[in-house]
Structure formats: structure tokens, C-alpha cells
Length: 243
Image (cartoon, rainbow, N blue to C red; front, side, top):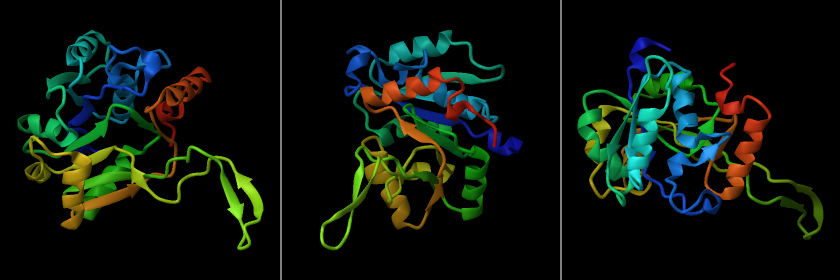
């Protein structure tokens, strides 16, 4: 990855409350819910840091003081800077970026969530973004469905089953890239997914970089257990940097 690409700061949305992670206790911000003995935000930082990124900005919300305390006390890789920016307990996702606009202005930046992990090739994503010549790029992933599906014929007879296949449709898997000019579309009350990204798409300024490898989101207690199991087997796929 070129030095220019490495200079992009990485903003991580860390305002979630993790209400569906009832096994973690009521007083734990989602970013600090542990997977394999480390907070999930640690895993997200590692995905970027192991691919050359050095500057990280945690956009905190619910119990942000705990996230700040953790960030100060963690032993990050040499040369990696992790700092926090308080963006309000109930601020929407786009508003969190808007609150940190002065820290992100004047250069392109990466943006992701504190609860998604993937074996993503960030260099390829950035090359795609630059070639597309747009203001923003999202990573498009096909998540696995929660249930198994039936293979039916025209008469309604079951021909077979497929256990939890991948969705045929793509969703935003995080790992986004923005140019500085995109900050003009953010606002204090903006929701990234409902306001900013649709406006970029309508203007023809949003590219999708397809990722067909591993991707998972820490959304429920079941998700946490599955990610814990992957960590227990050894090096989890999102920390395996072999390409």
C-alpha cells in the first residue's frame, strides 16, 4: 500500500450501546464487548493497522469515557495512534462524523463500524475507490442468512435444503472510503445510512467494492459466541493477513 493511502485516517463509529448483546452486561459499550479476550474495536483497529494504517479516531458515544480509558491503556502496535472524540450519547452515525469534521477535513479518510470484521484487502478497496473517481466507496458483502432455505419446484414440492446460504443481495459491510469533499453532505442530525449514502448514490458519487470473503458483524449474543469460537481455533480469518 502506498504511503499516500496509509496517510488516510481511519474513523471508527464507537457510539453503540450493544443492547442485543445481553450476555455482556448492561454497562458495556458495544465497542468494548470482548471477542477472543479482546474488545471488538481492538480487532477492527488490527485489520487496518496490519495493512499499514497508523492514525485512528474512535467516535465515541454511550459510555465514551470507558472507551477512552481503554484506548489510553491498550498497547497498540508501534507507530499506531488511537485517540477518541466524543460525539454525544445519542448522536446518529452521520452526526458523529460531522462532529469530527475538523479532524477529518482536508484529506480523504476511511470510515467503519466498531462491530464488523472481515478478511478484506484494503489496498484493493482503495485502488478501486481511486479508479472510480467518486466521493465515497462502500464495501458490499453478502451476509449469510439466519435460516436454512427450501429449494421448491413449481408445484411446491421440496427438492432439497440449503443451510444458511449467503444472501443473493449485497449489504453495506462497512470498511468505507470517503474523500474530504463528502463531508459537505454530513450534518449534526444526519444518519449515514439513511441520509448521506443515499444522497451520494443519487449523485452518482458512490462506488461499491464487492468483498466475497469472510465478513461478520457482532450484533447479537449468538454472533459473539460464533466469533469467540473462531478465535479459539487459532488465528481468526479477519486477522490472517495472507493474501
